[in-house]
Length: 451
Image (cartoon, rainbow, N blue to C red):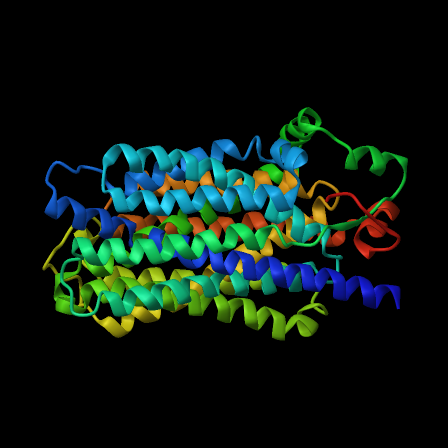
């Protein structure tokens, strides 16, 4: 009976957390997906406006990556609920600042949004891991991931209809979309405050001390974990995760919008691509939930999911290479690639990229949760740091590197990422589980450690 109550309480927490993120990122993912296109349309109307889409996003992720080193310390002070609510407020400011269409406003909120992300994602990882056992962590991450990724479907569905028949996104349309998305993000600020407290094991006197760690101790643990062998090997996979995230969520959809062959549908394809990336993410997370029972019987289930997901991404890279013009990454172009650009292939690739990204991210979370069950805030922050830093690298480089070069880099890196993940996963599966870690992951005798 205790195990049933534990599962129900924690599953409800994960579901409500997913709903909160779905509301917030219905706004944020949509803005990210169209940011390059959005800023280019402002430049068309105001030549003095010179903010570059990939650069502004790169600055956001650079700030985000650096702030993650302080994320565990801030979460230790604020707690997950208040930390996520504060971060959501900053995200709301970030979105609404684009309505001013001034460089100073956008560059200011770029840093505010990046700093807020360090708090938000550290607290999120901490909250999920503390609401999971070894048996439910993959399932819970997949449930959260499905809710999170459905947000892109919701937001982009709205912009799809707002952009219908437009070859250029005019000022009134831009501001209307941003006001609606900013209001949606504002709703999430209140929702995060209604998250329920975390219940977590108090294992022994040592764990009781860990639960009371302050910001300095949290920072020291984060640095020590960063230098551990498993984390250094996994960092190879995390680097690839960041580079492919930059391409999927900030580069690929605008590339469709800049492909002149698609004509008056090109701007709508930006939103439609975001929607199908979301559908792919939901499908990937849903399949992992449906087949969780089957996968749990496989010794190296995490590695199997990673191999499946990244092979799908490699197939997508090959199709994108032959379907879209090389310079569509940068600006409007009427060029074609090896074949005449196909809308069907382009949107199919959006779906496949979403499926692959879902497999990669859920299993990244799963493996660090199993390796570091008592350091969820620190391990989540490190994962997000390495991922976000290389999201920024991918965004900066996209201003200078053509589409074909990007595909030529991502494809071999995918195979290297698979190898690194398998090395660590085999070690984790084959090692004996200590009594302490087993108890930490089983879930008994809870005490509330966060309010």
